[in-house]
Amino acid sequence: MNLNQAFIAELQQEAVNTRKILAAVPFDQASFKPHEKSMAMDRLAVHVAELSSWITLILNTSELNFATMDFKSYKATSSEDLLQYFDTELANALKALENASNEDFQAPWSMRNGDVTYFTLPKAAVIRTWAFNHAIHHRGQLSVYLRLCNIPVPGMYGPTADDRQ
Image (tube, rainbow, N blue to C red; front, side):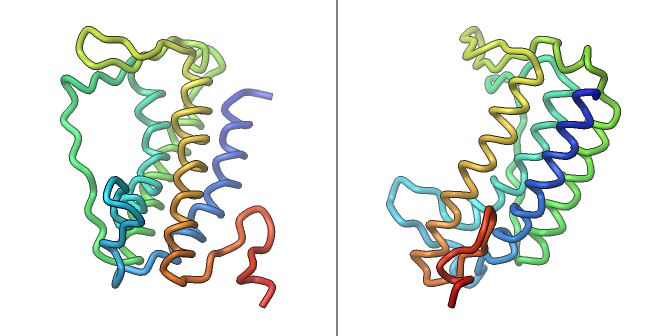
């Protein structure tokens, strides 16, 4: 099996869960933050939605340099807008994965800030940690935000307390 097929299968499976939690985000409570150091709920939701775009970035570049990047965060205005953004980035990531060879996944990729290199790893490892695991981590955070706002939390790896009612 080619690595791209394994990554595609996993991304498609996780996308179902990501879509469930993004659909539950209440935009009438978009500015909710559980702590002053926390991201606002809408910003966290956009971050979850954008993380599949990191797969495209990783496969199409050799590094991310925070000192030279020109990043503009997407600003979602509704659940529909957020889901459309997610679907677009997901489609781009799936296309990038479809076009990737096993050799592409072994190529080195670095994250840096100017002269400071945070890490250099094979692209496969970066996709696993900085796209897949990173998205799962922030989905977990988002589920806590929903719970604190008394919004039913969708089941992702089985039923939640809300599903059992």
